Image (spheres, rainbow, N blue to C red):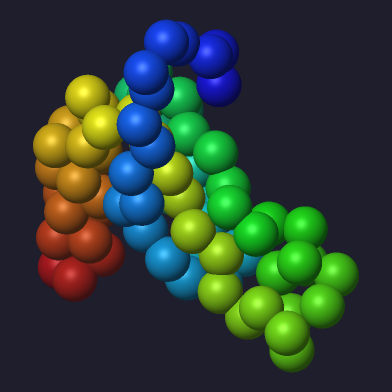
Length: 77
């Protein structure tokens, strides 16, 4: 993620490392940069940190959440 002055990252998802990578890929395919928080710990020592988080720039929060909601809606059908 390119550093911007006064960038605030916001958590939009928390789950298993596998789920987080799926969400990250979905966001990136829609042009939204994201980062995985605690990704290495979730992979190397899942018993210590079983969940990881996805963070996005706060200006992309609403669009990111909309994309995730649409994905969840399609999965529920």
